[in-house]
Image 1: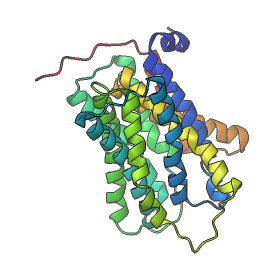
Image 2 (image 1 turned 180 degrees about the horizontal axis):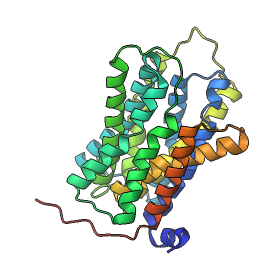
Image 3 (image 1 turned 30 degrees about the vertical axis):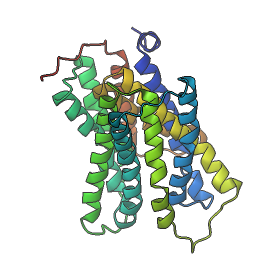
Length: 303
């Protein structure tokens, strides 16, 4: 079965691949804000605000049917705060630890999602899917692993990196659980609310003593880039709605860096190092295996 035929039969795959493309392009452009004099903390503020248009759009398509049950609110806010809280913690972690160790640790967040989905949701996949998951998990750290100089900042950064990894792994797991009883549109709406609630934190973390480009090249360009991230988050929710977390998580987490690396090579002439090249090859093979793996039933959950 070709990848195109697989996508036409499985809606989760269309949403997952859309996330891969959007996040891949976003990743390739994410460094523009810093180059334009726009700090990461304000990037978060802009990103949170760009969550509003897609949230409003999908709610409007459903006739403004927002699930207001306690279950929907708890799940949606939990998912939103885990994602946004992890991002907030990342800002601080990068100031006290080496990015070349922090990002490989964080990139292993699908391990949490896969373990929980395997054990608690009883999700299973075939031989191709299992091999794809393993290759994706091996590839993920290689995308960010590079060796350079930097202060270790003690072991505090290591604990914080583990917390971020856990937060994002749990976020994906709860995203899958929530989709069993809450509409994807409502989940994303509450994710937006959770992101907006942390804007004051990001605002307070901003170093206003430094020059900040609040013009179009700063705020405007950042918004244009971050809307890709926001829409990708929306399509990810729908991917978890229709697909297995054990497959969606590694596919999107490995596929997006692959697109980013290819675009960086094509447009910026950035040649990846040996480790990243290995990661690219593994991610490509893993993505193909996950796409081509036939659907398999999830085992019945024990009471």
